Amino acid sequence: MKRKHFIRSLGAGAGALVSFGSGASGTAASKSLTAPVGGEIRSDLVIIGGGMGGCAAALAALRNGCSVTMTEETDWIGGQLTQQGVSCPDENPWIELFGATRSYLDLRVQIRSFYTRFYPLSAQAKAALFFNPGNGSVSKLCHEPRVALMVLNSLLLPYVQAGKLTILLQTKAVAADPGADKVHFVKCRNRQTGKECVLKGTYFVDATELGDLLPLAGVEYVTGAESKKQTKELHAAEVANPKNNQAFTSCFVLEYREGEDHRIRKPDNYNFWRDFVPPLTPAWSGQLLSLYYSTPSTLKPKKLGFDPTGKATAGALNLWNYRRIIDHNNFSEGLYKGNLSLINWPQNDYFLGNIIDVDAAVFNRHVAKAKELSLSLLYWLQTAVERPDGGQGWPGLLLRPDMLGTADGLAQYPYIRESRRIKPVFRILEEHVGKENRKLVASGPAAEKAAPFSDSVGIGYYHIDLHPGTGGNNYIDFDSLPFQIPLGALLPQRVRNLLPANKNIGTTHITNGCYREHPVEWGIGEAAGMAVAFSLQKKTEPHAIRENKKLLAEFQELLQAQGMALQWPAELYK
Image 1 (cartoon, rainbow, N blue to C red):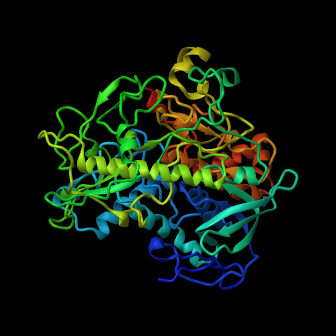
Image 2 (tube, rainbow, N blue to C red):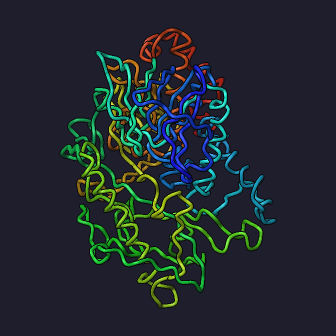
Image 3 (cartoon, rainbow, N blue to C red):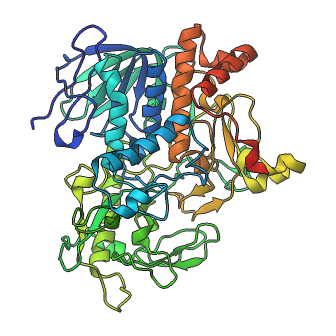
């Protein structure tokens, strides 16, 4: 199919979506009109970045009457859940019942329903109380990325058809006019055609994976690791390092077909990666391409297992089952030749270079190296990994490019764990959410709970999980407490009409580790979209909502009415 240019409205105010060939299959609309060079699109809200936070912000604003334009620089909306390949969402233990916004819980229900409606399921799958397509051990809903994409597009489709939503795929922000304390417009460029258009709105949301709109719009931000002196956090670094960001990962999906040979060509730099020992402090467990790794919480070496037949591996975690997204036993006999597993492991974490605030050449070089690492891991699994029977390698491992909509079989965008972060009105510190740190600043029952925020706009929970960093540190992993999302962390100190919608909120290097996961990102984005809609309805602005107790109470009442819990249920603490 010939790739299309920008798609614009059929008439004044009509919404549309860019379609770019097979990679965009399942997109929310198929209309195709070409926007003229220098064209202009106006809407109440402009969202730069179509990840989970961007989609949640769009849906929140749309259901409350706003018009929205949303860009996405890849072929797929959905961010970490879809185009980054992490379709085994990192969630809290209570997610089947509570612990996220109603719309996020509904998203999970619809992903499950897609399988039960359209896939021929086995009797065991039909009988499951909470059906898990892959039965992966890391998540209660391990599924194919494209199914999540289909569901997200179905949620957005009514607004596209009604002319309320315009989605621009393969589109990247390249400039902005920040004015004094407000953004006036963002200039975007189609990554394939080079054509540009200007997006104007009353409000703007940065939902990019790396906080790319912040420098363009002149929003003050920080990057990397703060020091103990700066944040007084228990686990902060002794010396600040703005270039020390968490590893990113080029994910991919494998199928195992026993008795077949699907070995790839040996990657050019395979020998480098095969022999590579991560130069981390404290020390890594040995070679990166190994079944040993550093246990995140203790940093002691730990043995893993790998058997793509799915069998138990002598008491060790079988990595194949860890992020398995399709268990063929869940489906009618013969539907899948083999099981499918998402490869997002310690062995393909890339931390040899920082990709924030670097030029395009440096960014592309590190992404290429991360892809090279992932392909080297695949080749190692096919040819060299130790087998339970004493042999080496599993040649039946088949790379599945169709699962992620790419020619090379690797995810459309790296799985990003850390972004630029706004300098906020209120910054979330370890003392607010860290289990150990809370005991140093609070006493009695208060020490057993996260800090309460009177301006709460949501809740979340995950342990603080920092992967090895580009500054040479090993894992930083420890317990947190069920927490709230404060509105103040979504408000830049100076700019009044731009909000962050994901891991670019006002956390620190440390607290980002528990605010970056799927349901929390969704909740952040939804809160941002709601703040925009409420501000437009009340002819106010998000900063004023927080500053005015009456407005804040009214806003929080609206959030709760639309299924956004502001605090954890009391029963959780009994």
